[in-house]
Image 1: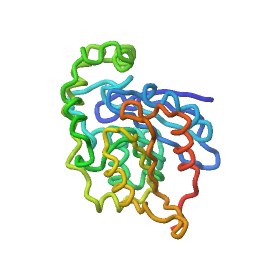
Image 2 (image 1 turned 180 degrees about the vertical axis):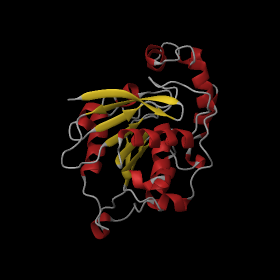
Image 3 (image 1 turned 120 degrees about the vertical axis):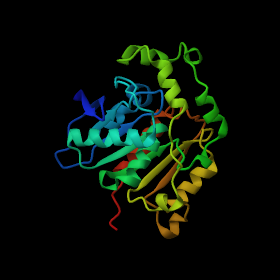
Image 4 (image 1 turned 30 degrees about the horizontal axis):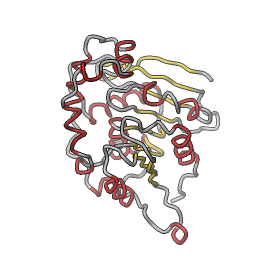
Length: 269
């Protein structure tokens, strides 16, 4: 499989990206992967990337201050990171993509689906709420208090030190994640108005409340009797025995859920 990498100059960043596989000669839509906070391409998607790229071109990117992308004098927040992604797609000449985001990446994917619908064919949002009411309170408290000592010896620390162009700025990144600007959340009307078919995934012991995920599904037209009304194009998958940090651990299950959703025909109306 062809793997290429590069850096896109966007918003003062040198944003690292990889492309796996070649563009589909039949005009297939590439899949864009957006990782979570403190993770990177490899940490978040390394186990599923080969399977995802087996049938489509995959583009993956490292966010500001993560992986091989440099940090700049700018707070971290969903709107800013989404702006970077829009710039990356323009740099690559990609007019439309399927977008798969996890946690912080899921928030960015959701922002793209609402604010840049022309860029998104299908949307996958994993382990993220559309409103702060859907988050468990202890998660925000824990992130806000993170220090380098707390993650010493973890894969997150090792990957940061090995790949970051700012290896001495790990505490700066933790501080920025602790004050991450999630915005005020989205109104129900914003969620119901998303044009792209949406797959919501969440762990059964995730940082996102399960009743919030079900409400999310209902706003996307789900939670119906499919035998009578048909299977909605927007769906919910609850991954058993899955936490927030280990939401991708059930590799075969994640691959089956995601590829089945992506390969399904687009609705005709």
